[in-house]
Image (cartoon, helix red, strand yellow):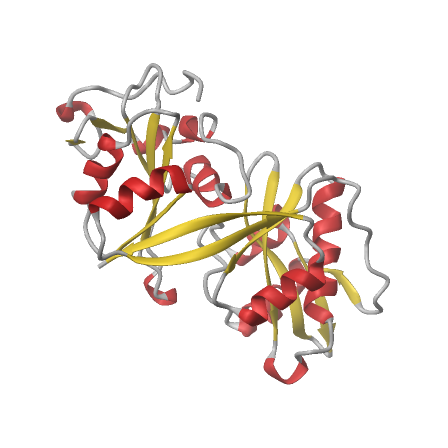
Length: 276
């Protein structure tokens, strides 16, 4: 991590939230966009990066001038049943401050981190529920061609009502509105008689990666439309210089089958620890 985060204050009475936690200093939320530049840009950190850029995340650092440990908390989504999520980052240093910080946060809380940090989290909180997540991505920008499947196209502003009618949960965790998602993030899909029957959405993105989520209405599943929409969207991101990626729960066979159909060629394991 570099030293870009130079505006954090070191005393509890000058941070916006007014507190410090176990050697981690809270960074002013109004300036959290600066945190995005020091976070690792990986396929599993896109949510943390975009939440910081939008200034909807809260962030804590061990050293404002040369941070080695950073915690980023993204808001809960009660409508989707998702609690606040903490992303933990440690740069080859002891994780005591991160673990102590986790211990002082309200529950429920999801914690996402790599295995090096996760071992310390689980040792401190052995009752945490662990979920393994596959972080998948394309390694090269030229690895996806636009599918020739008839009917798949980019979704545009005129499709916003049809997208809203899907009622897909969790689409707006990183975008303010569906119009914002369609124009800034991007989506591809199939529209029949004014109805979106399958689509792939950009749920969050960083400088180098765009994380996708695909959905098909129940009566049109198993027709290959979700994977075609996802590859169409991936090709669009690759043309803009971002690699498409996805997070797939290990216990979700349908999502795993879809990921195989999309054709991701690289992957790694990330753990989610749920503290209740």
